[in-house]
Length: 412
Image (cartoon, rainbow, N blue to C red; front, side, top):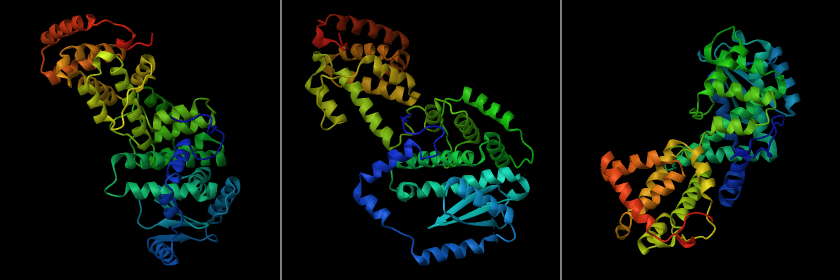
């Protein structure tokens, strides 16, 4: 979860996600030391520059004084020492811009006829966004540049698991919002940033920023899923994010996190959510095995299959807290919880219907009754009538157990 105390909407610094990932990799000393000691060699630098010159037209400072004056103004505003070089990509029709950073050099490549499309203020937005990448790389002794190289290298390794790829994606999405924030720091007007975004995506020479902002708000009212893009958030997300930052919305970070990360989703876990999911699962298991009667050898053996070092805890998360978490998650996680319940319900045949009745009770407390019934019927191949008869039978069996404190799932 984003920590609202880490960064204010008016503060231009990396997001909490960036900082968290940096601390994660710094705790892995061998990895950190290897990447932090790896520098581009002179030969690699020369090869990059040669390739750049082959595929672009270098726009010299003397021929394009306005562009470079704008770039100088941005560098002063962002307090960076970049030596800026601007290029026009050959044979490009798609509107875009990119930056490559070598030591103190910032090589910005324009694609498409951006000079003809954007106003002077919009070009300032574009250049400020690209130069904010430079700022991001240079803050805190260039440690965030190291973080980016590590996570992208891992994500590009075919052996990497999905959580690494998702972590890299989220890192990049937050980075683009940081760079948009840099544009706002330089220009001070959310409207010109939105109009730049819309022009780049549509190619239209005239757009209405306020109209698109209302469109973005309308989209987000009915949108529960997070960004699906790989490197840049959708334009409506970026537009709404920059408006919230401009307004200094007190819930800025929470809203940004919902737009970028979304609810806990079993299909898109990053490395932090993997840990969160593991802890969440253990909380549920601890609640399931809270009654003493269910602590059979078979059930406890299943706990160990989930967690090799598992031990029963007296300090169990409250039903209310778990239910609140479940209410906020993606449907994939809700289904997962149901399957965990069914796993424990059926693992010990000696318990007969008690396991089903017990987990049905828990599902009801989690507001998962419909989902759990559907999964039980599917996996046990029961008709609606058969399920109803079974439910009545097993609930009666559970009621016959003496419900002392040691046999209860409740705190009191």
